[in-house]
Structures are given as structure tokens and as C-alpha cells.
Length: 391
Image 1 (cartoon, helix red, strand yellow):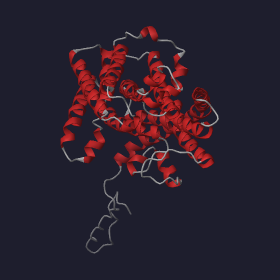
Image 2 (cartoon, rainbow, N blue to C red):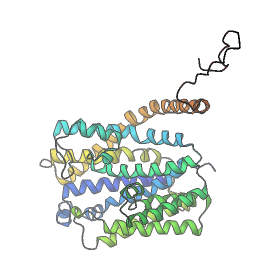
Image 3 (tube, rainbow, N blue to C red):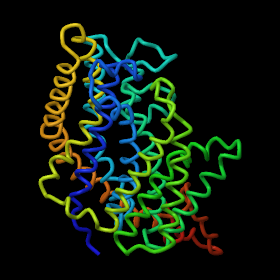
Image 4 (tube, rainbow, N blue to C red):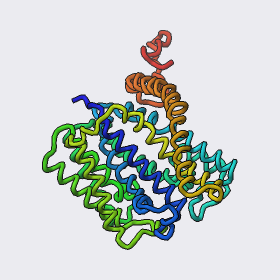
């Protein structure tokens, strides 16, 4: 079944990015916690203090979209699509973060890390594998990309095996249960691989896509509900104390996670088709650049102009600059680099595939084999080496 464009998802992705953007901007400008809210006034700070839940919506959308885009693809094509999609804008964002640090001195430093950034921080960040080697992110939002990479690696195993309805269900159930079981063990590798705190979002997103593609049924509903229950638990019990949320925050977080799951259920059951509008496509295209650079830009602007601009002025300037830079990244970096990268990666993939049969047909031995010479015939000269020898 060919998948139609889900324009409503383009809109939802942008909404999630804006929630995260406002969470960081308002929190930094007005101050984390209710004591700073009067500086901006109105209900905005009370809403944006929970804007970090935009990440939860992102993860559910990712489970939906990645399964949709990987359906029917060989694993090599899946890998090429992921590399082309996520790396060009990310490379620019990492370079921008380092450039702004070198010119302004303003950067986010993880507690306990060396504030003197260098190539030893920049280069691992360019691979997107920095957390694996214990190097700090050049921007704090990159932690979500590390979580996404876990999902991409796991889904690649399913794609390599061949994506089918039955295999998806088996994969989802095994991942959901295994991820929770492994928390009872000391097996760190599996805990890291299965990301039990975040797996329920991706698994529910996959279930919602299967509902969209094949129709809802009780099995998919139960998987999605289990994902929702575990997501509410994990999110409500692991809150960053630096946010200084009010005492009732667990109820609000539970409601926010529930809303994210409910919205994607509405997408899966085609109840949000009334939101579909083709002009959401360019809006959705800005989501990734906005997410990547907003905190870096917002932090530098706040440090440079917090004594010169009012709170609302600073918020407006930060949003305007972020959107402008994101548009430029999309048009001048992301699309051109993707056009250069995609055909070359596909050509490399084809070369690998063409070489595979030849490699399979090669002799298994690593050392050349020399046939023993025949014994000379009695009374005659030595006979020739056996035909087919390596000499």
C-alpha cells in the first residue's frame, strides 16, 4: 500500500519544535520556576514550563514515521535515507555552535566538563556519537538525537530481516517487555541498547502506524496502551529538579504525555485529516533546523543583549533570528548537501552490492595453493603441474 503524504504530521512536528523552543527561551529569559513568571506575565510561562514535553511528541511521531519510511526498503537504502536526512543540518549546527563559542565565549557546558572547548569536543560531536565516548554535547538538545540513534539501530535489525506486519508486532512486544525486564539486571549494555525509559514512545508510534496502514485491532491497542502507561510513569518520575516545577507537576506531565499519545492515535485513525494542508510541508521542513540551533542562538542572544532588551523584546528577537537561520539552513545547507550526498551514497551502496556476489564466489582459502608435482614417469621427464593450480 503506497503511503499518502500525512501533512498533519508536518504540522505536529513543527508544533513540537516550537514547544521545546519556547520552553528554553522563556525559561532562560524569565528564569526557571514560578518566581520569574511575572517578568513576562500572562499564561505563557505557565504553559512553556512544560514545553519539554514536545520531545515526547517527537518520539511518538518518530516511531510512526520511521516505520512508514522503512517499509519495503532494503537495509542499505534505509541507512542512506537516515544519513542523508539527519547529518547535513546537524553538521552545520555543530559547526555553528563551535563558531559562536569561539567568537562570543558563550556555550553550554555540562556540569563537571571542561569549559575549554576544542577539536577534541568538536570532532566527536560531528559524528553524533559523542555521548557514546563520554564527550559533552555542544548543545544540550543533542541528547535526543542520541536516543533517536538507538531507535534507528534497533529498527535497522527489523529492516535487515524484512519488515512485515507480524515481524513488527513481535519486535515491538519483545522490545517493550525486554526493555523493562533488563532494568532488573546489572547488564549495562542491554540497558543502553534498549533505552527502556524512551522505548515506549517509539513502540507506540510504530503501533499507531500499523493502525494507520492496516486498521486498528485489540493487539495494537494494547501495545499502544502499555507504551502510554510506561511512558507516563517514566516521564513523571524523572523530572529535572532545575526546572523548579510546581508540586502538581506530575499530574500535568501525565496529561501532556497522554495528549501526545492521543494526538497520534487520532492521526492513526485518520481523524486529523481535516488538518491536512500541503502548505504544512515547508513548515515541517523547518522543524529539524529549528530544533538543532534554537538553544545555541537563544543562549548567545540572551548573554549578549539581556541588559539591553526587555524580556518580550528578547523573546521576539530570539524567535525571529532562529526562524531566519533555520530557513537559511534548510535552503542553503540541508537541501544542497542532500542533493550532493544522496546520489553518491547510493552509488557507494550499489558498488557494495555488486561486489557481494564476486566476494561470495571467491575461494575461501587465504593462502595460495600450489599443486604437488607429479612423479616423473619411469625413465621419462617430469610431468606438468596439475591444471588449475595457482602457479
